[in-house]
Amino acid sequence: MGEEDESQQTNSENLVTEATDSGSQHEQVYSWPVIRFDVPPQRTYHFCHQFRTAPNPNNFLKSVKWSPDGSCFLTSSDDNTLRLFSLPEYGNDHLNAATDVDSYASNLVVNEGESIYDFCWYPYMSATDPVTSVFATTTKDHPIHLWDASSGQLRCTYRAYDAMDEIAAAFSIAINPSGTKIFAGYNKSVRVFDLHCPGRDFKQFSTLQGNKEGQTGILSAMAFAPTHSGMLAVGSYSQTTGIYREDNMEPLYVLHGQEGGVTHVQFSKDGNYLYTGGRKDPYILCWDIRKAVDVVYKLYRSSDNTNQRIMFDIEPLGRHLGTGGQDGFVHIYDLQSGQWVSSFQAALDTVNGFSFHPYLPMAATSSGHRRFVDPDDSNDGLNLSGDENCASVWSFSFDSPVGNDANNIIVDDVNTPEQQENLNQDP
Image (cartoon, rainbow, N blue to C red):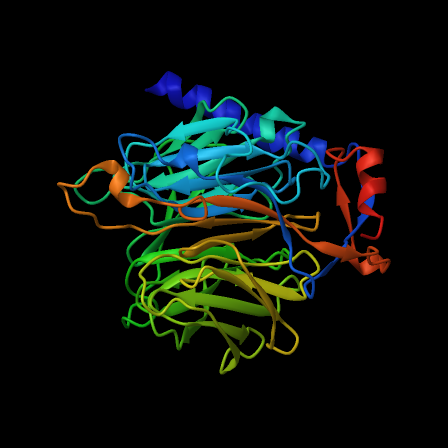
């Protein structure tokens, strides 16, 4: 066991060191494309059959997340499996993909032992640097795992134990913006692991104060402010969201108002607003964390009859939010006014995952929900179409990239000059 931890620690130290070094190499200024949401997007790639394996024909997707470098996306499904799909090319050569066949097979399949609670990417992940190409997962009755996104090998394990010295599984995880620590949510507590020190060493912080005030229940969702302000939002199944300082987990606010247990939290791009969504709750709430008193506005989505975790995402410019729902549609909202902008049908069942590409005018969706069938029926009794229990990649129309220096970002060399030239053209 000691040799395993030492080997894992060496891998983690290399991860932090090389991520820092790679940030200063092959950098170039990039301008965001302005997505046009008044034009319906077109399906570029589609996947359904590889999720319907023979042992579990009732399998369905749970969520989807793009990698930070935009080279691939990761899906989580009910068969305790994560699948990685690389983006073949940065272009629109495969528009209007057929829904009855898969566009291509997944590049990587990672099998976990139990139900997957949550997963997240390393914030400085780059496909051109295999050392940084990792993601973390947490599953039922298992420790936190750090997986190699190139080979599918297990890199590191971070173990938390309860009072009986048994493995305690985290319900939510997030890696801080500097890429040095893993924050994990448990029942009324947060444990913080040093990324370069795998094993059972961690710091534990209770979300309840001595006078029993604070956050109770299972901590089900986490998100860091993208502005490196050191703020962490933690959602709980007790219908509350707490705002904490990253360095010492000092509680700043506890927000009340969600109708159901909080399942997803996300900061705005400027870090001044927080968006929270819950299960069996038809509204995403917008909070101004500079005041943290009242809800600024509510964004409707069809999710009042499901306990599923329905994810939403904010586009790279930070002006619009997209969310799925039980109606099979993705709804787009203007974040300045809180008004509905447009919608498009992404599936014929619940759209539980939605993720904007980090810098291209694209998005990924995942759909599906648990279906109950008669045990005497054959597997063919489900009769699922290609638009159910599926994942899709969508391409949006866009205008010329924003020229404001404030919207320029630094990206690594995952884009070729030809790809940059294509991106800067009007549709």
